[in-house]
Length: 271
Ligand SMILES: O=C(O)C(=O)[C@@H](O)CO
Ligand SMILES: [Mg+2]
Image (cartoon, rainbow, N blue to C red; front, side, top):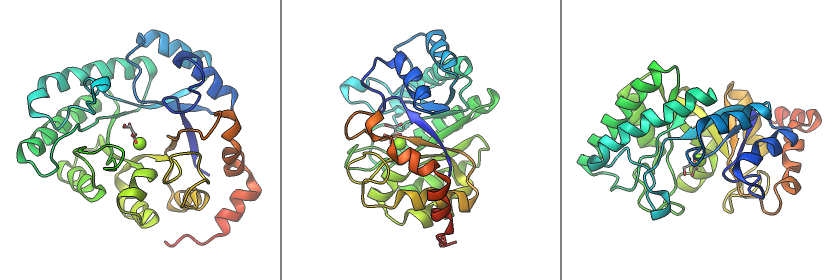
């Protein structure tokens, strides 16, 4: 089974942010991701991470004014300077947290608009260069239109084309299974086709974004398929627990149970 990272923006939210690290470690996680660390000084977040003995896998660049509905800056031509400053901020935190990956959110902009596309490509080139110099990888993630209406990057094919076009060794795809299923379905074939571009995977049930194993997909077979494909990265648990976080962790026990995972491995993945 893949290695799972707890998403501390959605899990363990019963506690204040800095206490979620210890809770995730106590629940058996070895790594974490979350949306944003910027409400806390980097050294405080790093201290919580280290005290819990966890690894930081991923977080996002500053997205603009989240509370006012902004969802990233990369495709907003008029925010190009702010985007560049946000890259520097994120890299400072990434150094403090030793985080290997950063997600650059595109923002709300019409998908086909030439000015937004040009700004997005410029922004990604700049951020991937800076990430590369710092020994990190930049990620882009298609997000479904139901959860984030108007989000610029709402198509996995377009994300793959952009990564291909930029051809940057430090630019990869964040393949969120939840968004993939809502946008296109065909999850296993999508994983297979896009595997060379994938830097990170995230999981949640569809449609309610709860624990794996509680929705319309067989998430355990998808995890087995990731193994069959040779995916060696992390799988972020970006789901909203249906109840208390700890009460919903039975799926993780099942995913890590050799009996169950052997059964899932015995299933023949379609590739
Ligand atoms: O919403 C998601 O899915 C994410 O992975 C976030 O980083 C962006 O909102
Ligand atoms: Mg995601």
